[in-house]
Amino acid sequence: MLEARRHCLKSDYGYFVAYEFRPQGAWRGRGTILVTHGWGSRSEYMQAIIEELRSHSFRVVALDLPGHGASPGRRLHMASAVAAVKTVEEWFGPFTGAVGHSFGGAVLITALKGAVNGLKPVDAGRLALIASPNSMPDLFAYFSRELGLGRISRAAFFHQVELVTGSPLSEFVTARQAASLAIPILVLHAPDDREVPFADAQAIAAGGNRAQLRLVNRAGHRRILSDPVTLAHLAEFCAGERLLAAAE
Image 1 (cartoon, rainbow, N blue to C red):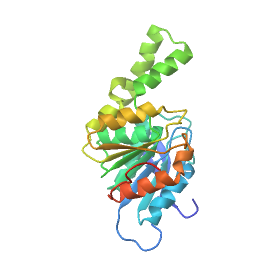
Image 2 (cartoon, one colour; image 1 turned 90 degrees about the vertical axis):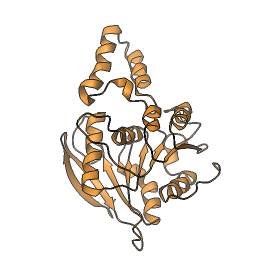
Image 3 (cartoon, helix red, strand yellow; image 1 turned 90 degrees about the horizontal axis):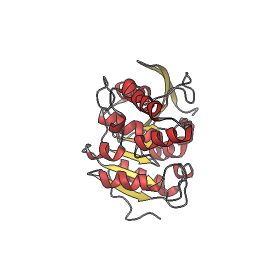
Image 4 (cartoon, rainbow, N blue to C red; image 1 turned 135 degrees about the horizontal axis):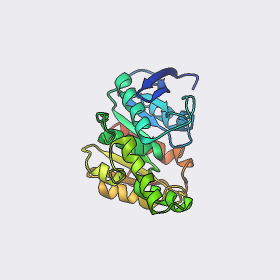
């Protein structure tokens, strides 16, 4: 992180921090890759991916989502996250590609789809989703059950999504969003992930017109970020090269 240029940026939801990592060695103009972390995380946890992409002559821009890492605040929702991504694009885009982990992947595909009212779609040449959830409606339903919400409270809870983003909760299904994007999408997931089911990755890959699924075995939800198979797939995918035929 000491090698990064730290930028304090501002979206309509407030200030946040973004980091600019220059490529290692000679700059060959391979472009810029945007990297986003997951819920409760920060840019440092994406270190292995950032370093791998830098070693392949990419400039990498990572952001601490609002309320995470060095970014101020104690709240985060989809609209504020997507607004931060859009602001980063205005400063550092266009993006050759984008890489998101877990909730960060859901943020990226929502940003590329333009599903938040008032924000134009973010442009990226390709998208990599690592251990990302497929269905926000399913996730909200799970939390509703865990909280013991009644029918009226549950409906009000779901309606908050539309109040915040301008789109109903039903719009936030990654497989459906992926199907509407005409860019290559790489889905990386570990079958032993205990936080986001592997079935989510299968659904996303099946829904995307140009999506491809690659397994990263025995990598869980977080170890996958530094697994050599993950790094190899990402480097080849972002460079537009042919992916490995199968996971190691």
